[in-house]
Amino acid sequence: MTGERLYVLGPARLERDGQTMDLRRQSLTLLGYLAVSGERHHRDRLAGLFWPDAEPKRAYANLRHVLWELNKVLGEGILDADRETVAAQSGLWTDLHAFRQLLAATRAHGHAENTVCPRCIAPLSD
Image (tube, helix red, strand yellow):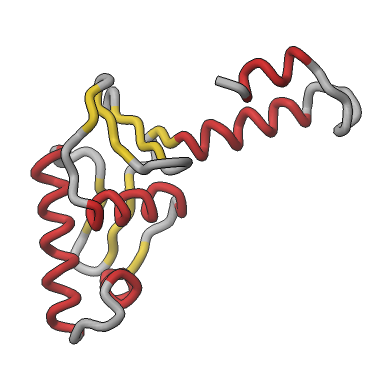
């Protein structure tokens, strides 16, 4: 998987090689949930979480459609799905994970937490 960047801080969007991908909000929301959680999820749990007011059969159909759309638009490399579970591939870049890594780096820099450090602030302001 190369070039995909998922932004969840601020308006959600998925970019591939700098171009915003055309995804429905529900598809983008599911992808964001899977990518940020970093875990495998059972399909029945996802169907209930994303379509809580739908009958189980309808919720499953909605989930299948969203997964189909994601695979159609993004190709087979983004999701790791089987008959019972779904996960986002661990290599999918997200702005949230990048921000957490930057925070960890600033904490490990070796100065007091409440100290203003220009070297630490610069990457966080991008």
